[in-house]
Length: 456
Image (cartoon, rainbow, N blue to C red; front, side, top):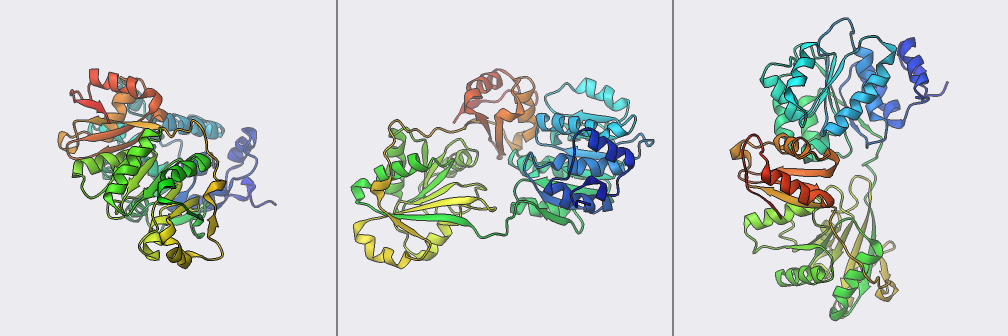
């Protein structure tokens, strides 16, 4: 018997028949590795991207454990957006066809509160929702989790990106101590591991995307005249088309000059250096981290503490002062098993020093081999809106998401990272929708209040 057959699991005949009927022929890697532990009742932290079959992995576990005759909320599934919650609920309903009267309810921001009260009054077995709206129901005591046996955090990294860590912690306070917790995330950040350590017991760590392999970085070196450096940098960007890139320079003056020259060449770039005020630094780092700016030009000191999960490329505009600095710079790319690119420009007077960098894997190439691309531009996927309200105004990520997906009518897929500070909040909105979002938020309210809002 094939090890990826669902029949190798301790599932009911009815469930196995339904899985076959709806086209689930064999388990995906995430299902094969996680389901045995989920069915045992173990806590699981799993690294899995969208499309890997993760919803069925936790969905089968949830439905296997469900007591249909017990008409109480037995499972809570938290999702970052309404669209994902709807998608999860839809797949769960399909997986639940083998059993009669399984009630699955979605509770999300951006939808009217009243009808949700009515649905809750009729009861549910499984609740799927966004953290902010779930918390609102818990605080109003319209949702009880006292009979909950399973908690699922789906796309946990995205929920943290969107600023939901506070809401998640508050929701957890309403859940029973004795429960099975499943955590699914596309990336394993320190924050994800901290949450796992806090809320899970002896969790099985499932990685279908290996993060154990050494960083795969292609390192290229080009010897160029100082006068040709900026054109070489532009050629690197146009030839390799990175999604995002940090350009390191050794001085503040260089950083500013490089960023300004790139902007003149229709490459969206921001500069960060030690002379910036804290609010200016926040503005720059938020835009780079939330994909509102593809190029960050930085000094080493200014880039400290910058944690970008997926960085396509690093460029050393100058040869670093030491190989230790070089290793630290390029180590920011190719994380979590992804491939990365690192480029270093060498001035003629640095050639002797560059010899120390030569080894079997580093490529020392001729910059003339880079093609000149006419009309190349680098524009951001998102643009950042700034809201003049933050933690001190009790503004939460869920409030902002609710305002954008509710009254403003935007789909959650158009909304990126949300960052909330004491007095300001930042939200990344898809470039094509930012004017619409700005107009509607400016004329609308967040949490019943008017806030000043502008495009960064």
